[in-house]
Length: 343
Image 1 (spheres, helix red, strand yellow):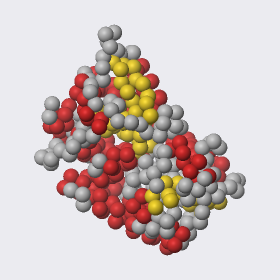
Image 2: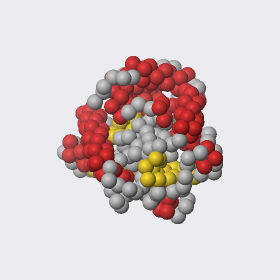
Image 3: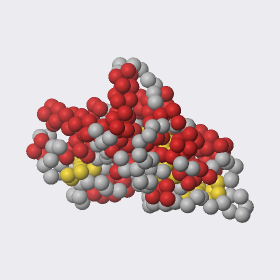
Image 4: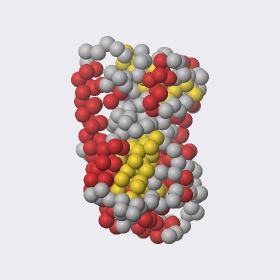
């Protein structure tokens, strides 16, 4: 099946164009998931951040798919790695394949859409079809399966109150936010999610953004940081996505595809509800709390971060014609939805 047929089968034919397909990712090269003699299909689900990391819902999604398919699939969770038929994690992970993937994951500072608006753009504003097309060029079908909710801020073990404070500071931030802090002289450093707390403790990181409100309300997850600069850099939070390899998608029946899409949509809604509940608890707990110290970024730092974020987004849109079309769609919807209430 060629790229056009793959797009048709995944519902993205309306936006298919004649751009050249980029080299397929590891997921597209994976052999089809094997079916046992019993008729049970064995499927691997790679989880970035590690199975069991709170706030991701990979286990819940796997169970829902297995249940809906009445045992015809058996899904095994594995930590990261290439070759899995399903791949679960922050949508930021695909930006290494093409800069335009960052536009679907969540943008820094005032450039981003909140979870409700992002979901509406994907489902009803044309964003989802553009996402499917971009993913098809790299051999996978992307599905939204969750959202972290708004960032509680940047947890910092050191002062970050002047541009000079950012010079050389090792910060864990995702997506185009890394470009934003780098413009102030910081050194973006990607650390495995399970190691963020220890990296802040031992000095490998000067600051980190992670897990939305969940990190603030769970003592075992809260970073050991003296300061929380809010709003954060990825203030709207990040989309969680499921990448379905081309080989698996083509081997699935129409019914199996419908089940997978329905389970992904359900998990996305459950994730949004989780994030909202965590934010309500965090807001109530924050009032009497004296630690960490909650601070806004000073005006000069905030202005420079905003400017750097806008420049980073523009560079992503300049990657190629496909990226420009995606950015134009994103900005058009952002203007349309400005000031509107979207639950």
